[in-house]
Length: 174
Image (cartoon, rainbow, N blue to C red; front, side):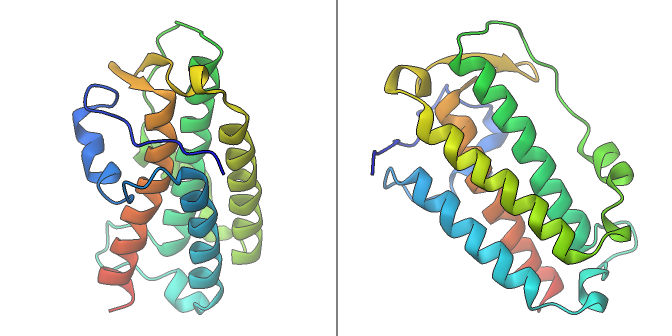
């Protein structure tokens, strides 16, 4: 499988390092996206409805909220990656993750429905990143006021998910 090396400094916003550090530096982005899909499906399928609705503090998200957030952000990152890969130089706006979570309605949905949506989005993301040529993967654009490469957006998807998996393991399942 084709290697997609981790992005270099300057290809991503400074805040993104906490996500990028989660992903091994082995160039196997596509594999990491596939492994993440397996981890998420296994972890979420094993939880009771009570655990999926648990908040470790009153103002924190439930596990269902987190899954919807991961899915929503992945869509945003893929949209940005597609635009930049196609050499679109339009600066893209940021998103308000708290507003997105508030209005996602995740807690009113069945976990099988949320997992089905997540899985379809992840499969689409994997197909998208597989389709990018070397030239496309190295293109950059501006989103949320920061320069970012297509490559970095792929690694942000994987790292953002790992970040939330770690939070779930530390604060929800411990």
